[in-house]
Length: 366
Image (tube, rainbow, N blue to C red; front, side, top):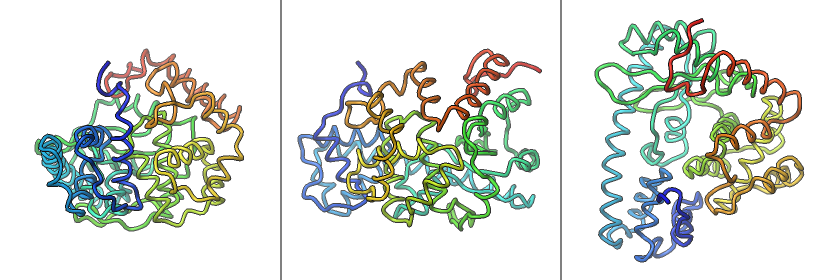
């Protein structure tokens, strides 16, 4: 059994979650010597190592760690600093090309969350830069970015990605190893229906890598993160759950307004399951009104009972098994009409393309 498959040390997991909790507890020590190495290893797996190092540094506890744990944190911090710099350098020409072409864009996920929710953007570890353009401006955005030296997949690949997904990886110029993902939506066609025009109308200023750009409004930010988590079948990546907990702790997110917009997007169940995940991992961050919405939903409670994981870091069991994913993808939809539309879209894609690995394959020629 691999380390990732093995059950984590429960004491180490609890210590890590306490250390990065939005309430920023001041326990002394946060990590005792006997569980420090395992807690640091878990932090690396869950993209929480930089934040953990910062918390320990603030409390003057980092030098008290055993040498192995201290060295692992230091090495991880140096690696993430290098990665973060490359990601910043990837966003700069992206933004410049789009702004020169007069194309509005929104910075998504880690870039926006790091700038808006964390003391330092580096504390929110990320693997790529995500930006959203309006669907009707995708062709213009592609032209502007290609002129700036970005490399796009082939036309056949793009055709597949546009039908099967809602984003596309592109490669920056000048040998930058970072990946930029250009989005024309935040949801798979036939599965959910967010209001892209409204997302742009409600966007707020955001500064990342010295660039003044836009990010989602707090409500839209929470819904997007909840939807993103559901598209990964609640993969236990605890940095994503922390994003949700921080949004609940630091932003005004009225439960009725969240639920009403989620209903319009067709994502009531992903929203409620995200509530459950926050309360499971970071108790005390889910307000009472949001808890009541969760407890009133028979659908959400049934899913949690039937598919819930016994592992403390997971919400749903079998999240990484493909057949289970397909079943969950249907059951996490809000009702039979939505399930029928999503299933029809999936069958159409399956008949048209032989496999589902859009990021690894070349689409069939039309």
